[in-house]
Amino acid sequence: MSECTVIQQRAFKDFKSIKLPETPASLEFEQFECCERLLVLADTTDSVGYKNDVTSAWIKLSDPTDTYSFNLTKDGNSTTYTPTVKAFVNEANAHYATIPWRDVLSNDGSGCYKLEIDYSIGGISGTLLWGEYNLQPFSIENANTTCRIKVVLDLKQEIERINFRDSNVVDTIRINGFIGNRQPNMEVDNLVYSDRKVKSVVRENLYTYEINTDPYKNDVISRLTDLYLLSENEMYISDYNYHNHSHEILDIPVIVTESPEIDYLENYQRRAVLNAVVSDKTTNKRTYY
Image 1: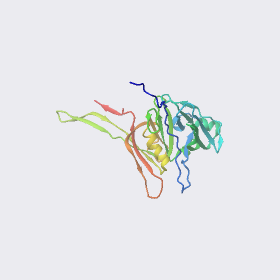
Image 2: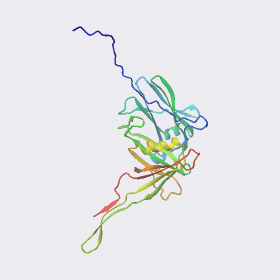
Image 3: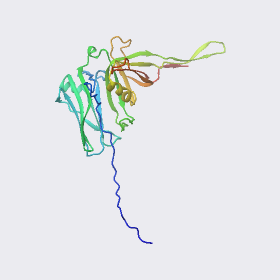
């Protein structure tokens, strides 16, 4: 039997795929801002959490040779404050930066800021607009009509293909809206004894809260549904409305209990409102025999 003649030599090559960052695209026939400018508040004299907003941003690369930079600007100029970049613990080639607006306010003052990420991934360069922000000092007046969701991201997030486990990325979003309408949802377990007297065995309050936003465009609504309400490992709610029945909804730990609902309001306009129900993270408000 004759020897085989080599007529073609094959080599194995592994090409990694990566989802390039995207800034929400604008419609060609309409001029509008890609991102709605969000209010962020901070207090340089008090470090309490509910008075100080933070913003986190992240990017995933395809290779260690790819480059990136987190850039915070104020009115088009570089800020004195420089974001500190960290690597994700359980995701190779992924990085994030958390901006404590308290530090920014101390260094650069109040005003309009823009957070962008410049990148070169697989030879393709671009700029991702993460968000635009109106930074103001915390006060009852500045916070009125707003509510805030704070999250700790510590799960595998398939939407952006990033494993947040053990990184504990903290982020907040302050929106015009309302968090409240607390309901006890009391569960009652009574027992009828032989003498026909009814006595309590267990009573437990399972408090729920409603989250109702003002009308927003898709950028904010999708961030709420696909990031804050979907990807959180820990969530804290705060409300700053004068008219709220309770002024004690300040960084209360909660968890999502019902699917969020989006109301698209009227036809031929781009804004919608989001409604969601959350409940206490810890159910320890009970009495029992």
